[in-house]
Image (tube, rainbow, N blue to C red; front, side):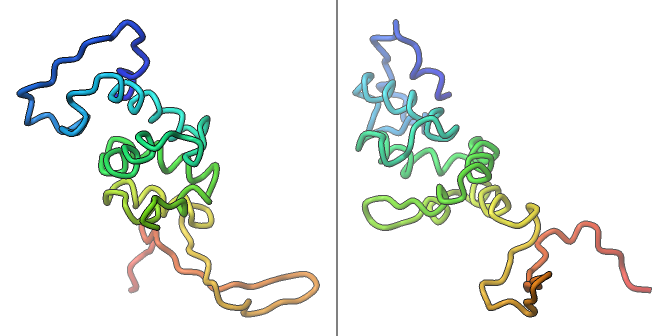
Length: 151
């Protein structure tokens, strides 16, 4: 869990031989300081207390390469995108967006957060109708759970 990063007294962490352990990733197992630093950055980034652009290079790489691949972060990432929709469009050094790199569960929560009323994807086309008192936009319903079958 990312709470490990907040353990100030943790100075040694032996992960050698733990090849089945996928989080933190194998490339970090030798560097306890990096593990702590990266894990400590996850909460603030996901909760919005730390801007992804302001995180260190290791922390950004860890976020893009590893955190986005874990379904356990799906709800928190969805909440982050609801607070700041631009978060889904942030990119890594290769120009890949957060929402594109996320695992299926995380991507689904972030996309749902981007929908109007967490349900409708508003079309990017011009309004269907526009007047002094109203604007009518096209939208796609992505939650068909309340659709009743035709008789």
